[in-house]
Length: 185
Image (tube, rainbow, N blue to C red; front, top):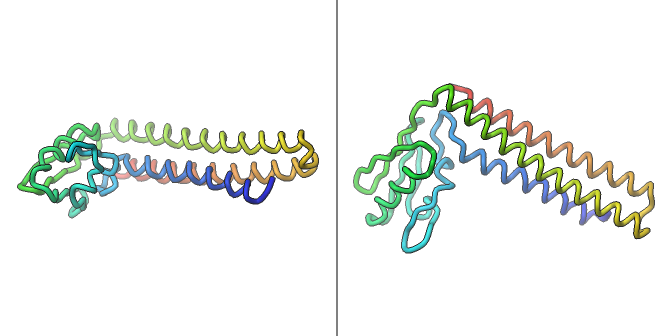
């Protein structure tokens, strides 16, 4: 297996971590975060646009997110998109400013969020294991086609396994951090 092929496997594994971090950013913790509204799409100008492309998202207080909508005609669409996002938020409109207060998380909701974060982490682990499987299959094929020796196959498969273990450790670390974030009051 060439260095390029190993780099490609590493890139794909890191992609799983990046996707996990994006998923985690959308999960609500006790504090306001502008990234909480990132997954929300607003029906504007005949298409669905990301919220941050129709207004400025800010967190002026720990329990408040504000969206300064640039086009007065889109205020209702922004309010509707936030309300129907499934995040349990209730926006309040003041002119072109949409205030989104974050309610206190109860114990039941925290447990639910931790469970969801666990599912996201497991999906990332599965993605990394699939990349590992692809790498191992490639090594088997190369050995079968006599491009690499049995010893080289063993050395390369150990490299792939170490890479996999390191990435899964990062995923577990990210999950533990998010779990701690959610559990804090």
